[in-house]
Length: 66
Image (cartoon, rainbow, N blue to C red):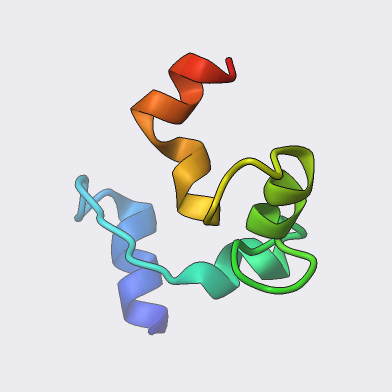
């Protein structure tokens, strides 16, 4: 790992891709989507007409409730 970090710092690698999961954002203080206090539950409480949280992000729903 130390060699990799040194190579990155030296400019040996100029194009990097970092793959991460949902835990990175949660650990950074950004709420998740699915938990009882997550973003979806908060959005559904503001838009009770949405049958499911995913509905809020549909084109039809956004057009009807901008």
